[in-house]
Image 1 (cartoon, rainbow, N blue to C red):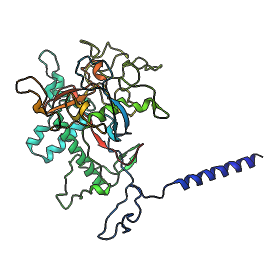
Image 2 (cartoon, rainbow, N blue to C red; image 1 turned 135 degrees about the vertical axis):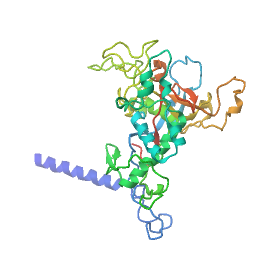
Image 3 (cartoon, one colour; image 1 turned 60 degrees about the vertical axis):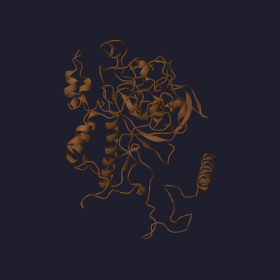
Image 4 (cartoon, rainbow, N blue to C red; image 1 turned 135 degrees about the horizontal axis):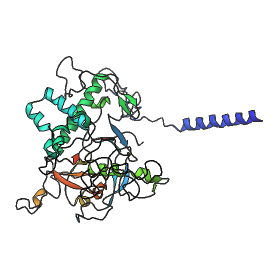
Length: 420
């Protein structure tokens, strides 16, 4: 009797597998385009013909986490205590993309400086240097941070600060070239935990990539069509950043329903861990709790950092991103306009300069306004901000050439060809 039951069960499994196999589409896809064109019937990859190389799908670049796109309610959820009314609630949709799981650290930026020192002019290197004087204050003994925060090994994995929006954008360009240059030298990436690690380590891994090979010994850079290189790293748009910070995928259940909205990148209205256990009551972010209170009293209930903290400190949100609230604010791509929420598209919204609501509409010459085409948005709150600014819907702005000890950055990249 038992044997008959097992035979029946095996038969059902085989039938199910056969049904699934029959349901698989035989149509070509981006990953499996077939051997010939469905438009002309001409075979691919013939000599002097159209080349369609093998492509296993886009891999996550170093430090990147996949962010599945979707619809969300963008905007400020807390009371608008600043009365700026510049991020009213509205529904938008975001294409899937990748984002750095951490802020860029001092060690990452020093790698960049080392690379451009060896192949760029003195002028370029000087323009890339972070402003370490952002820590200076004649009425505060921050002298050690001025001289040591960027370069002393103990600060390696602390977020880089003193970097302007322009410098962060330049870093993203260099990083794109450096990663793709290493891919070209090391061959195809090996998948590892959703991202990749290179097959070999290069003695010149810190050297920046060139747009084209300049010597016979340098490997030619593969074309974008080959699928062997990654799309460009860049700063995330404000909408992407806010979507990734809220991580509402963690509140979702069947039939596109969500349990709740989020004020912060975690559930609830508190900045402390509500879960029972050893970590109950611990701070979930690094921020300023009040006047003169940058961390709380010594002990496990404080936030563990007077200034910045290491980039992997505090729990990651439901997308696996660290410090999307607190530690340092982060630059985003968008130019600042107070009425962007009225003007931008509801699909992958972004505010560019020079289009609608032009800067000439604002009276900057007579000091009646601060708004021009060089103001960039930053978000997320920092070690020097109160909890209000930890909410992803809050936004502030600063000139793109300015830098502070409270602003860092992370990069993003387009995500194509997958939903999960």
